[in-house]
Length: 320
Image 1 (cartoon, rainbow, N blue to C red):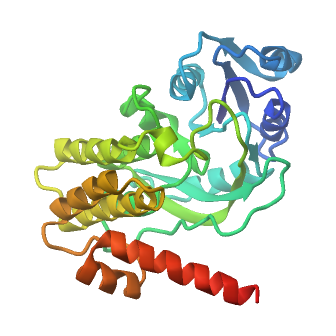
Image 2: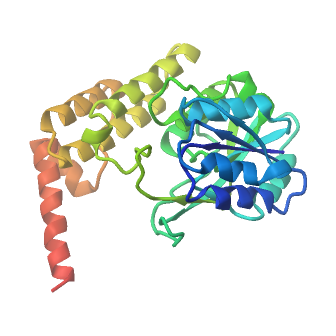
């Protein structure tokens, strides 16, 4: 069993992350830390663990490349990826190994669990975890488009990761979603086993993009990712199902709404038009029934403005 930790300038959190891997209740674990060109004291902290971890240092290439290098060094049957600012739940690997070993031998699958979202100082946050298991009649790729697990939620099989060549380091973000889709397209099923796996820390940092506005991320980033996912699926399937097209369209619609709320009306319309083109007449609007009705009558800009106004009124009422 191998835990792979990429690290770039995470001196404030690294020791806790490595400790959480070393104190796992599962006894057979190797911890591999790849320092991705840190310029703070991260490398010194890594060295302080001495023989308890394996480590390498490389020039800064990004977390996906660091994870891939850790995968190359890994010797375990299973691999858990852990970012250097996150923390594993103490018994998560033991539970997930047991769950994995109970899978049918002829089933190509990996298990995944839940993430606990926490603040910078470790206090638990509410309302983020919306993972679910795949329905029996649901295509595995469609399932991942609707409910993609975060990087440290799955317990991966090393041979499955090697089969798809690990992470795509050319992508600017959502590399774990791309990896999971490629695994699913290679026949790997993601089996949801409810239960906490790790603490996913939310904090600001120069290299973190999850908390940035759409303008800061690049307004077309999510559009390009949706196109990438569509092209990836089309390489493996001649004609993506209506369910897959609808999932892609709904994702674009959600991002379009968020971009619209930031005031970028023309760019948001590009997302909405692409969503409609993908679903080919099926429903792609994402929102409450009042939102969908207003959108059908007056369009997304008016619908978004109406919903924002309703929320503002309800907020004032709640504080009255």
